[in-house]
Every structure is written in C-alpha cells, then in structure tokens.
Image (cartoon, rainbow, N blue to C red; front, top):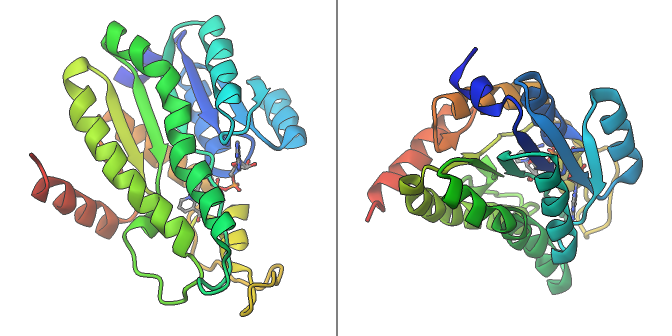
Length: 255
Ligand SMILES: NC(=O)c1ccc[n+]([C@@H]2O[C@H](COP(=O)([O-])OP(=O)(O)OC[C@H]3O[C@@H](n4cnc5c(N)ncnc54)[C@H](O)[C@@H]3O)[C@@H](O)[C@H]2O)c1
C-alpha cells in the first residue's frame, strides 16, 4: 500500500469535468487507489455512463454556477471525509484572436479560472482544519508556451492565470498540511484540442481538421498525476521542459 492509497482509502475524491478525458482517467486512478469518487460534469449522458461503468457517484454540475459547486460539495461531504478535490473542467475556445468576441473571452475565463475557485473554495476551511487534503488544478503547458497561430489565446491566458493562483495557494496551504498540485498536461488525445484548434481562419468551425499527432493519452496523464501526488509534487507534467520552466518561474518568484 502506498502513502497515497492509504490516505485515500475511505476518503472521497471529487473531480469536475469528470465525465470524459483527463478527468475521467484521473477519477479511475483515484478509485483504483481506494477512494470513493464523485464526478461532476455538464454532459449528463456521459456523466451517467461514466458513473455506471466505473461505480462513481455523479452529479450534474456546471462550474460557472456557484450554486452547483456548493451542491457538489454538500454531496461529497455526505459521502465521507474529503481527500481530493480536482478542479479539472475546462473549455477550449478556438478562433483567431482577432475574431473571438469579448463575451467568449469572458466565458472561457469564467469557466477555466473562476470555475477553479468555485470548485475548491467550499472545501478549503475543512481541509485547513483537518490539516490534510489534496487540491488538484488542471492547468496546461499552454499557460507557458507561445502560440504563434493566434488560435489558443483565451485558453492560454486562463492557464497562465492558474500558475499564479496555484503557486500562491501552494505556499499558503503547505503549512496547513494541504497539498496543492498543478497538473500541466501537454497535447492529450481528448475532445479538447480538437475544439481548441479545429476552427477555420475566419472564426468558423472546421470540424476534425486538426491532426493532434503525438499526443499523450488521458491514462498517461492520470498516471503521472498520481505519481506526482504520491511524491507530493506541486508541479506535475509529462513534459520535462514545462516542469523545468515552471519550477524556475516558481523558484525565482519565491517570496
Ligand atoms: N487535451 C489536451 O490537450 C489538454 C492539454 C492541456 C490541458 N488540458 C486541460 O485538461 C482539462 C480536461 O480537458 P480534457 O482534455 O480531458 O477534455 P474533455 O473535453 O475530454 O473533458 C473536459 C470535460 O469538462 C466538462 N466541462 C466543460 N465545461 C464544463 C463546465 N462548465 N462545468 C462542468 N464541466 C464542464 C466537459 O463536459 C468534459 O467532460 C481541461 O481543463 C483542459 O484545459 C487538456
């Protein structure tokens, strides 16, 4: 039994955006390590299927709605002591930056940044009081890398914000025994990059025109996540360059 599995046994892992992709793969890992798993998502059919196939509790939840997240936290607390909260739900918005309307920028930032806060905040006081807990935030290598295509600007902006957010949280919560992990995947084979990159020049969607090439699988990302959590790593990435840059960035700015 590993340190993480003995911690998770009988505890609850909550994952937003857990019906598909990286969130679903992470939820499976938490379950395999002995946690009770609650996934939330906006896609009701996928949510029900993932719950049934894997023995997860499920709840429809839109991370842009504070009341949904409060309800998700209530449900989770009813299942047992909370071990992990993974703020993973995110949206990709494609389109050349000169064509993306401000309302869409606001939507991406609301889901990808404020949605993360809505997710972890209802658990924070309990984590600090119990002096343990893991907060996982799904960022992205896109938060650091340059995007010469002009197609990924809102997503990259949101993921850069998560670096600052989690760095501060990590420093603040470490003395309280609470671990914060920033998961920064590179290109991963899910619906997400297709949505981000499958748009035409004038902002119109061109379905399926993007070859995601040498992408990681969601399972590979989830395995890296639990390995990193086991090691109590703040920065978790399959991409060594991302990890190095993030580490330098974090160390340079250490107060
Ligand atoms: N796939 C990649 O290449 C890649 C790379 C880096 C980071 N990421 C990040 O990984 C996370 C998961 O994405 P994925 O690749 O697994 O894609 P995905 O599309 O397979 O999964 C995202 C899930 O989030 C859900 N979701 C979207 N909006 C939501 C909302 N408002 N409330 C609740 N759920 C919502 C979707 O329904 C979906 O089930 C995202 O935060 C994304 O930014 C993905």
